[in-house]
Image (cartoon, rainbow, N blue to C red; front, side, top):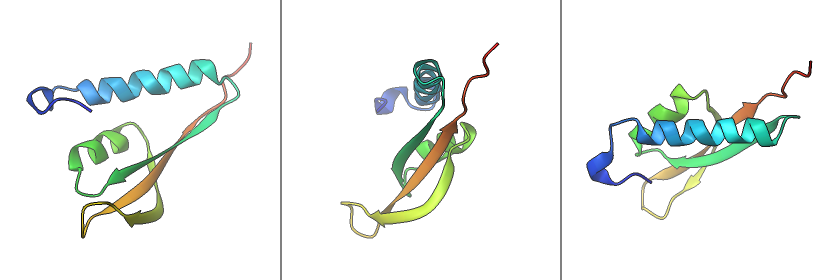
Length: 82
């Protein structure tokens, strides 16, 4: 989470990018990242799309009435060995 006063500065994008880079380093055989996001959190949805996350098509109700959470995934490809 990024403090509201600091949102819109690319911090969340950078944090997710570092996370994905770390996963690629730790799991050279590849991995799948599964996450869920509330549909009304448009900022994080934009970040997920920018970082190549894909919608699974699976959702469930969130704790906030009338809002659902949708599962997203991203494949971390296996590193090529030289």
